[in-house]
Image (cartoon, rainbow, N blue to C red; front, top):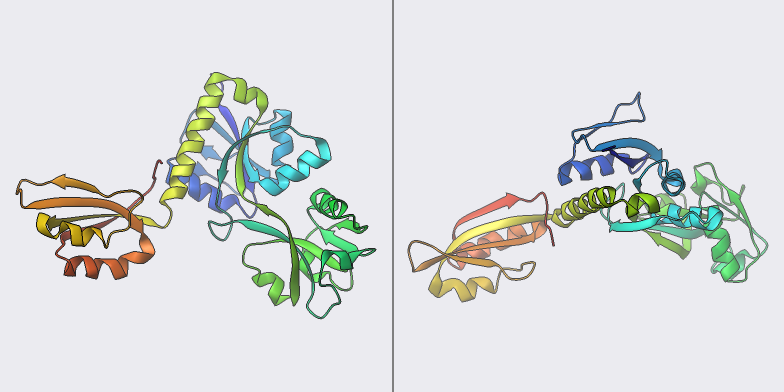
Length: 294
């Protein structure tokens, strides 16, 4: 059986993608001298591909599946009508586990306050086709120019405004740019080639990868908590314990006591443990989580 050919986004998403796969159970070994990382899975063959080109190579069948942003999928769809199968939305990005926004921005001291103000103006962006479609939908005539990088420094000399990706907006603020509107929001997506998706073995492999990647994301920022408590104090203690659904409660050899096992947000632990102790909990254990399969 030939291995599944998987595209890993090269560039800003590369490190966070490799880390995500490690938490999901796959070690990917990236070398600065090769575009073909090794893995500890004989059924998987990886290739580093720029996120901007991933959808095209998946659509063309050069690779069976890959991870890229919904922004670049949309760009390729408008440009080439490339058909791919969306498998799983994965909420992670280069700085945080969040959503990337492509925003229309202009200098803080400029006259631009709304998209309509850019009529007849020049917009610089890497996301050309999506930006053109955005203004066409609004009936605004603009010139959209491709930017090779450092887009945020182009207004007002080289362009009137820009459409740029941001997670926090800090780079835009540092360059004294004001956000006018959101052009689109983008999350990372696992996509598959239609022919690969129709192949039973490849589809199962892709679905298993999607399941475990999603499980690793679900575990991000959460920890497990185990403790023992007397039955007569259980009700008061459960009022303090937030859980994904309901905590697991198990009987102990001493019938007067029970064990409680739950999953909580890691940021709440420092405040919660002292309150649990005060409510009668004993033997409190906090443990890390790699995956949560919903």
